[in-house]
Length: 201
Image: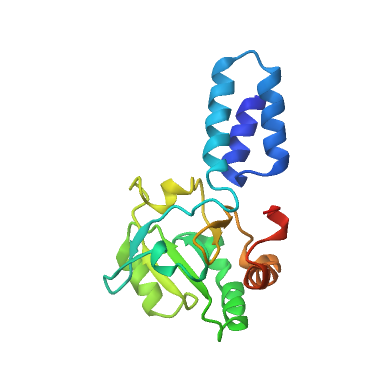
């Protein structure tokens, strides 16, 4: 049960110092090699997305049919919002997203990348065209693709937020939500220092 709980929290929250400590402690205590192996796999894959690690590149298609990759935005801080039209909690965050956008409207060093995982791309295109989404870069990606944001960033559920610094390095694999009240401060911190102090790196 403990192993299952740790595995679940890795998926839902990513890696935190507390969870890493809990994982390593359990690995020392348990005599089940299969539990140690599974948790080590979890730990390794999240460490690969730790602060300062290269952000895995992925590509999506805009409503106009243009391909855009994360790597195309290198040089900018990128706030990634993984969402879908059918996801109520995703859409509920949009008013807060729009407020954050307004705060950085004149700043071209930050990009807001909205990655839809909708299979019904027509519904997605209609929602974007109707202006019901925040301004920013909108792309759609196939969540079944092993090179999609879903696979590369170990997304278990949406909404999911990811923060990448201007050098294309990870700032936060599980970034704060727009409604948290913390996002604007974190973006300004990245602009000023290039890193998030809360990540220790």
